[in-house]
Image (cartoon, rainbow, N blue to C red):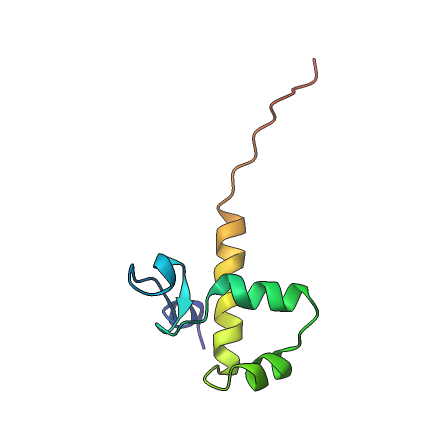
Length: 81
């Protein structure tokens, strides 16, 4: 599945999880899944925990996070002279 199709799985709606990015409008946020992955949960465990998730959803979460990080701007507030 190409990146654009994966990213289309990430949705935001003001009435769903206070507008945080979710997967396909479900009440599962990108933040929840990233936290679970950071805590050592595997893709298999996540799909068991959230049966409505698909493997492509996990890929979409990770791609979304990568997109956010790639857009970060870093400013040197203490330049060396």
